[in-house]
Length: 326
Figure 1 (tube, rainbow, N blue to C red):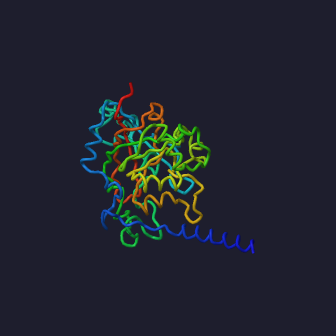
Figure 2: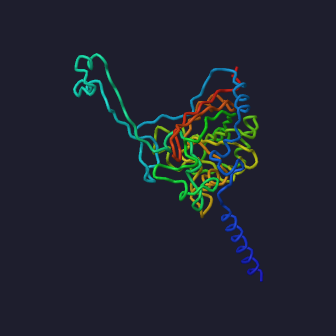
Figure 3: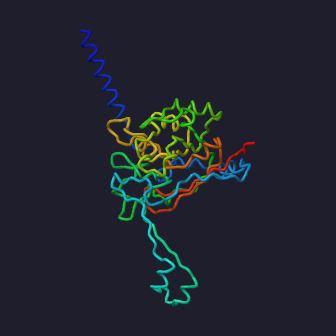
């Protein structure tokens, strides 16, 4: 009898878990059926002006990484790596005379030109809401059958992402807890510990940037890509549902940690944020200087390239502290 009760309890437990894992569904926007930017609707002219009015110095932190041949990438998934090539060189222009102006002019006027090729999710970039979906739909119920053409999405493409000005908060988890283990899933308790140590509180509409410490290894692609720590699903839900954050970011390759916490979804944090909640996020940030100077609260200012229909776009975020340390 006792074994039977235990068996029934175990079966009920797994049934509840299965039901919980089946609750993922694409979210409908509270900003209307045509909304394409999700929680970025929380920004207003007044909120942006309030943030800018708190800037007390001209010191600026560049939160983006450099692009270079051999940089970390998603090549293991079949995506192309970063490529750079010269299209014009000073000596080549003398030899080829492409402008038809002759050797004398081309010796006098040096000409260098170049080109790049990159995956839109390389380096510091923002994920658009069409990047991941659930059951054939993306945020707000848009479907590829109706809105995905040969040249990209007609809805929620990177061109719709507005310039972002908001209060930024650095959660330096790697400092609060010490070096994070490989594949570590950051919890809400970790975030609360970090907030307490830093002496700040989150506010609705914040941009929250999480430092795992992984950016320290960005120049070494094999180390940077190797079983990196990231945020867990429970922590993300705490940030979105209880703290009302507007935008997230982190210094690792793919924001969330692997292996995933759900057996039925290989990127549960991505789909929860993008497809269910309409929350975009930034990956591969450079947060080391902010950490070094203990800058935890700042004006976050960023804009991405307006790549029509794209699922993500390179971004160059800036942080300008509200208060200068003495």
